[in-house]
Amino acid sequence: DVNAPVSSDEDKVAIFYSWGILHPYSSPRLAWDMWVVVLLIYTVLFVPFALAFNTAVCGEQVDPLADFIMWFTDSCFWLDIILNFTTAILDPDAENVASMVLISDWRVIGWSYLKGWFWLDALGSLPIHVIEKSLDDGSCSLAALKTLRLNRLARMIRLVKLLRL
Image (cartoon, helix red, strand yellow):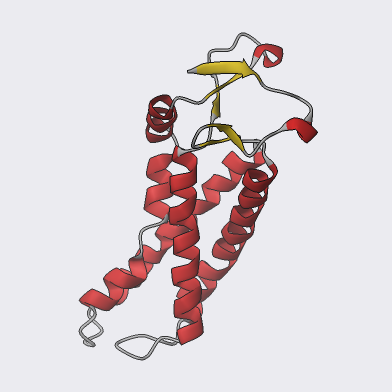
């Protein structure tokens, strides 16, 4: 479903473009994207630090605050994946910027997301800390598993996507 041209008047942008589909330039969606940028910056800075100076290895207790922050961050990225499936997209076949229209058909949005950023988003959102906990028997044989946390750095590439807005 291709709808009317994108309005350049930001004051008239509604939260929902059509029923259940978010407008990509609505204030709540843009605020969410800025929150994701903050989380991405945190991830880019924290993951290498945690890998280099991790004190909780070989069955030792993980700091509860650090564990909460990991779960919270992962949950935000999972929610972002859901929001990306429900946010209208710009028609890539438009002839020029002035004729850009938003597509609000959830099937087209979903297929476009699956063909593009979804796999990188999903890879960066895998809960590696859960896999570590379930496989770690305290024998220190899984220390290399901690390098899987580098998958979170895949999220850094999302900064490129968000900076294109």
